[in-house]
Image (spheres, rainbow, N blue to C red):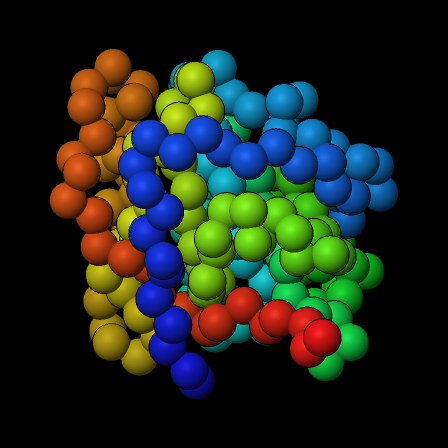
Length: 186
């Protein structure tokens, strides 16, 4: 399994807008309608990556723990489904149902949204404050498949808690690591 680190988009960057199909209810959704009142977490994930599979339960729990605190979660898959058919939209829908995702799981068919966010891997996390300014772009926690570290979400949870308590998010952030986004060949 190839290991790719996130690119660490500059803190303070405004969240690029999007309008993508939610694979669960098959409607288009925009960042503006999905954003939270306290913060918005945009996650680039996919169905088949072992790094994402390893954390799916924690992602589902994060959303359940923070939605009442005004933090909305949004998942996006930007992988090339021609060469990685396990990431097709209908399988994304099934994955969302199987993992009890209460957040939208959007399909970025053109890969333009992943490029706008400078997303590099799955999972890749982008936490924005209530003004949609990037405050965190690090790892979920230190757990990786096979390293025997528990999946707690502690790094991302600390950033989310800081926003909930109107505190400054620690700018010292470790990059996320996972499978590289499967880019289309031109």
